[in-house]
Length: 76
Figure 1 (cartoon, helix red, strand yellow):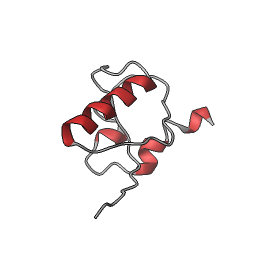
Figure 2 (spheres, one colour):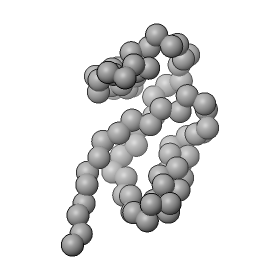
Figure 3 (tube, one colour):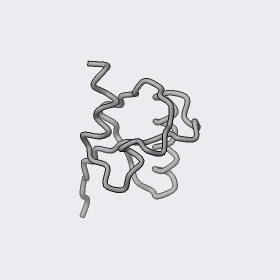
C-alpha cells in the first residue's frame, strides 16, 4: 500500500551551501534519490540573509515554529 506524508519543514543553511531556491530543490532531489522517495514541493520561501549568532532562538533544541517564522514576517 502507498501513503503520502505532508511535511512542513525549515532547512537552515548555516554553512552557506545553498545559493537559492533552486538549490533547495536540488537538495530535496538528492534526498529523494538516496532514499527512493518522491518529493513534490508546493511552495518554497527564502528568508533574507542574516548574521548567525549562537544565541539565536533557532539555534536551540526547543526552537518553535514561531521562532523560525520570525525570519519570514518581514517579507509579508
